[in-house]
Length: 179
Image 1: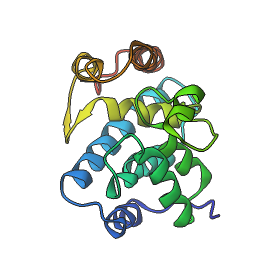
Image 2 (image 1 turned 120 degrees about the horizontal axis):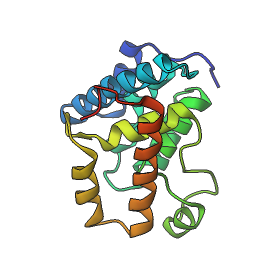
Image 3 (image 1 turned 135 degrees about the vertical axis):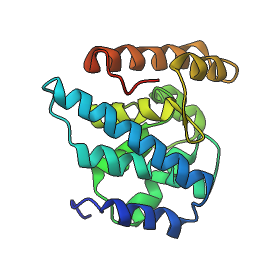
Image 4 (image 1 turned 180 degrees about the vertical axis):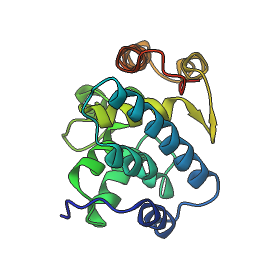
């Protein structure tokens, strides 16, 4: 397992090699840009954030969508990333970016391997949050995301997204980058 992060160009190439193209690449780039903006806002507030990890993790967060567009893309993406020899912090971002995280009970119900699927590190939280604010390749307010997700997710999942939103607002202050 390599601990060296791929470059931006290498990450985009890994996405293409996995079968990601078009809208998926545009989405990944939009999430990476917003995540980088949020990470920089956190850094300006004095927080220790690995900017490179945020960018690369955000670019690769949906690599599993090359194989499935279901919620399982997080686990599939983690497997793809592991097979590519990507560092564990990138794999964790990929596995933990869905919704506001997937609880142990939900993961068991989904048939996922026993693991942690809720964002733990600041980098994981930033990527997960940025992903909630990008629809296609457009930035959208969190209220829109919550409205859409409320139609398909249980209230407990919506509560985790709201909690993530509040945490990110507390960390970034009045970041102009947020839609």
